[in-house]
Length: 289
Image (cartoon, rainbow, N blue to C red; front, side, top):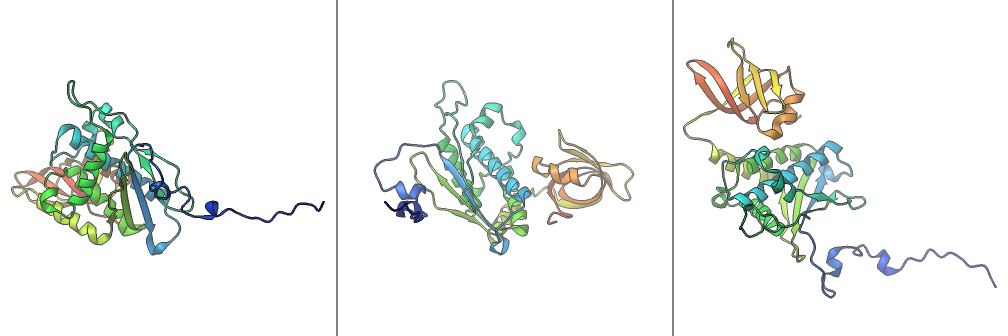
């Protein structure tokens, strides 16, 4: 009997790139319900094949923040002024925490699922399933192009979108989000590009208080508290330091520039001719570095 030969034959079902893809099975039989998902796809600049680890991590962080804002909306009601995720209670944070699955080989497709049990905001109320969070997450994405709907979007969610726009200016060409509910219904993909981020700036412009002018202040960052996100700024021509606060997602930027000259934009409170405090809406100097 001749010796066996290795032919290297691979079955068609294994060679087919669609094998293993959820879509390949949607038309065959019934599929058990699964946890709702938020799938993110990143396209590197110039269609390259790599991204800085810090950039990928930042996208994951900001995606998680947006899901937390969506969960807070469905659990506690819409609040256009809400912006501080630190005030969320631990049970709600656990409910809206994404679980990241293994990345697909050779891509920046980042699957993540919400696998928590239904959340009970208050005794006697109907439990909230994670599908409600996914539904609100989609509404937040769609509201960017609908100014009237965006009026109910929290300030924190809008500022999180602005943080994503900085990544689009550097390493990433576009960000695509697709949500899939428990019954495997796939929502229309939402694509983020630099052009679409201009709509975010217009929404933020509409939110600026009419009674208080937004100003830009330059000075040396002399102190920063990582717990309270409070800072002190030394400004030329003013003996007393300016005190102020920033949003939580600006904290890493502030920490890196301690002792350096910075430019900040926000609401200024004055005492006479002197600046007493600054509530920062945006960091300006070096934000695109």
